[in-house]
Image 1 (cartoon, rainbow, N blue to C red):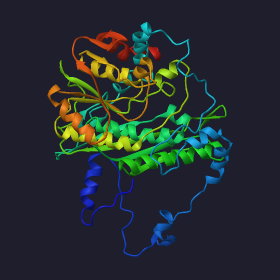
Image 2: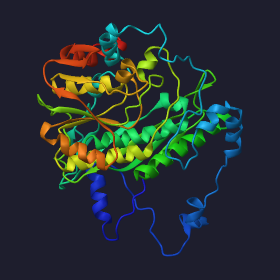
Image 3: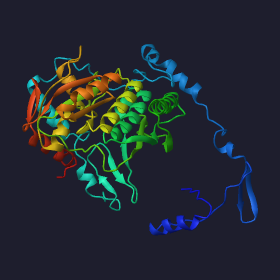
Image 4: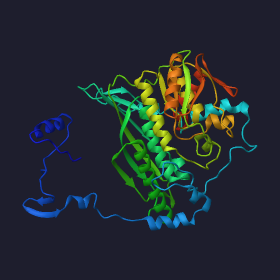
Length: 448
């Protein structure tokens, strides 16, 4: 890493390096002239304007190659997708994967929904990662305030009142259907998880993992992935401050799904004033804010039932309004808990809240035209957060949501020892917790 120190403070930087057993060496100085010079001892080996390595660097244009794949794709899918400057998207790229519309007669009966929730909680896509993260240091020099298992980690900065939150996310199943949507959704989810801890997103870093960009499809996926990251960053007001790209990834000649892995960092003005991951109390109100138009095709539930299809999309303007709403409600002290609706849909989000608090809840599903109960429970889509609030603050939060043009549904209330979703399931919280805690270990042939 290159560090530019303030003149006269070099020794301070070196002492910090030494404290952490890191090697550092002075290699140059900033000059007033617009020229970068590199020397090997006394020999000048390079001299050029710095802009030639940055904003004016040569670009490898793959747009023509990418357009070849876009032209060959199904017209209905090609026309549905946005260009890079748009803030919503529909399916453009559907790989040859087995699909189902989720409504066939082969679907399990309603009586099995509770068992399906247990299976989802135990699946590798959803199950607790404690089996993994318990094996490494989580305290990071005693700076960890909230560790693994929450929507994001919270870290203090010694000697300061403020702190940071960090999260990492990816949306490979969405990206396999539409690289633009998958990349934009990954940025949205990472920043949304920061917001669920009460942190204001500051910036992201990305790791773009794709197949062969020398082929039309690979070039198209690379172009659309970059466009998706850019559109989300512009809509949410976060810059990309670092990152890397891994290309030519394949297994037995088949390219991987175009996957943008996003790391995000957010700021807490007071590191003690975060939204706690466990804070619900009997009688608290459970709200869903954001987008309720979900589908099973790109979901973890769909993966278990051999579904993988669109259409998929993301409304980045709604995502931005949603994040601002939750941060403002938190500033007013109106939120007891917040949890992103992600893998496993609303059912898993509710179950994870109940598991964290050790308290049940009784809720009903949002009534959305054209979405049946199973899809409403397990379907996925970006831009939704489950909130737990004091009943006395419900009107205040609803007013804020209306002013910010963010949809809101009152789902029910916290209490009891069952997660009861009327009228589709009622499962003991203890059973949900066991499935969630033991699932990954069973998948790996180990116990947590």
